Image (cartoon, rainbow, N blue to C red; front, side, top):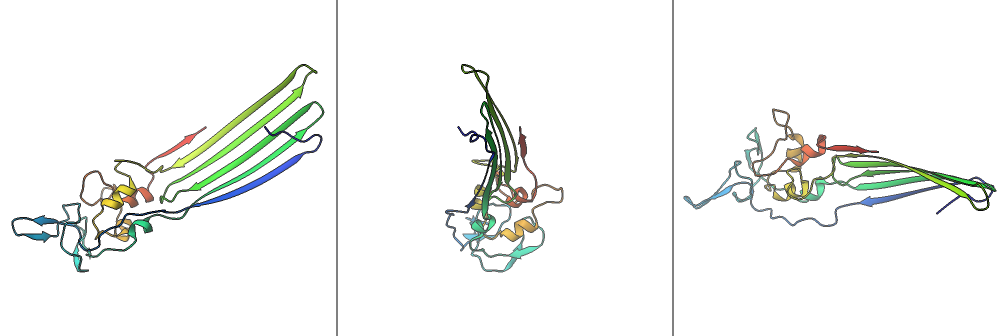
Length: 219
């Protein structure tokens, strides 16, 4: 436990920075795009009503966009999984003031943590305050006290497992012809909700990145 040095006011300051990035990413095939196999004709059919890459070979031609609005190039983009994420960081700044007198001592400290997640649109910050003091009432009686206050704010905590907003799952299951730019430029539908491609339990990952889907504050 830290306390002030006798007589002198001691001021300490420290800062640290940690960077975060994608460690590994899935390997994807870039030969076939959205669609299905038609057993009746023994052909691969382009079909935006399916959410899988069992369609025709990707050839760069213009085809109906994933949401049925206009057309888009029927081709795959390399590194689109990694490109969705960003370089994250955590910065922690701390300062403390302490002093010890003959029969009393105190220490006040404050730290601020600022985190920008690798998940676009997600972040976290935290304020920590601590005040500790003590006094010698007599040779046999000493009184000490400590007060801690923590306040944190989180925005768009990343969703996990089978959540519809789990970006890792959605990017991994996305048909290969649906690019990041298509999803980012068209993340809202006409009703103001997420503009998704067809499929069960999926959501446009840029809807998560560009809107507030969850937040919390704690004191």
